[in-house]
Image (cartoon, rainbow, N blue to C red):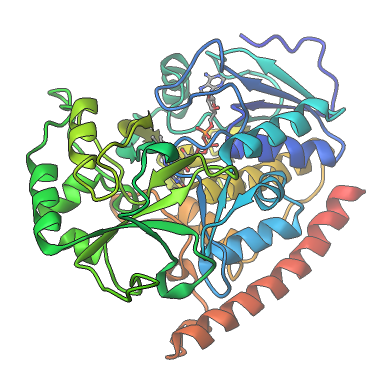
Length: 448
Ligand SMILES: Cc1cc2nc3c(=O)[nH]c(=O)nc-3n(C[C@H](O)[C@H](O)[C@H](O)COP(=O)(O)OP(=O)(O)OC[C@H]3O[C@@H](n4cnc5c(N)ncnc54)[C@H](O)[C@@H]3O)c2cc1C
């Protein structure tokens, strides 16, 4: 139990120094609030994290599309306006990835850890929290892999069982073990530099790969578990089971990728993305998998160029838990039945690194307001921050599912514009304009 007997006004406790908790701590600290930031790693690991760094990226090193106009770009741009710690670290440690913002994961999370550790208003405490602190404002940002004891405590506090779904991670390959004679560097439609390493497959190679993905040995679910996947992070073998051609229209689609010298086109292409600036490791794009480790080795080595691949990390699958946010949270992200207990990150049913960061920012702004005794206003619905917040706190249909940022969440009249690019650009400009007006209000209130 966290003892806070000596607390003075102006303290905020944050549980979990992941994507959301790190951002929340930074934003609150920058506004003069003293933050105790609890992180259980390295003493207590999760099934997916590998380091003791704050804001560790557990799977892909990509923070999604970074090209205007797109909803993921807009969300990042809004976070940049707030001097987001996480997005500025991502910009500083970006690796080539075409239209996406991908990062050198090690430098990225080390940078965030250093900045948090040296901030005069932040105390980083390496300890597993097993009960929710009973006094003072707290932000729970312990993520989809919240430790079991704290999960129980949360479930008890909200009076509900968790919801869940499964997420899978892709393997990472040693760059020295790739056959570069069989592969080629290029970005789809030549967007970006030659940022991706492409492994081309002919028809026979593609169908044998699909066959082995379907038949390869998988890690079994426990008898009481029903597999529920998040559509954006579907294991590659599940996609293969949907139909033999599914992968060639999905992560292995060959369109826009011809050989730069021979101009040859292919039946399917497996893309590899840089893991780090040094170019010593690559991850397989869209190749999240729950095949057993020996089967991953065997099946992935069927891909041309990867016959001798050695693995830095194998793919895996994890159960993610989240709360029924629209039922239990207010629009300020604290519990309806326990004011001042905030939630942020994937645990509230947003899906994705940047979405988790965004909810960390909003929970912090809201908690800071409470601590300072000031009025807080939510972000306008026509901003990416506002649209995502509205989804997680106001979704009223039957089954609440985790959500990425996308234009479908924007309920603005610009949605009626037929031309997609023009529509998206207008939404973006309007959002950034609304955001700056909201920031004036928020910063005015917070800076007092
Ligand atoms: C296996 C897996 C793969 C994923 N892959 C991707 C991907 O490729 N791309 C993407 O955009 N999103 C992905 N996600 C989804 C999501 O974006 C990430 O999980 C993201 O890290 C969520 O951010 P968060 O801050 O909510 O949680 P996290 O980043 O997980 O942070 C939570 C932190 O809380 C700590 N913690 C947990 N319990 C306690 C406790 N009791 N006391 C103290 N500390 C505690 C953890 O150690 C962790 O550091 C994936 C999720 C999982 C589980």
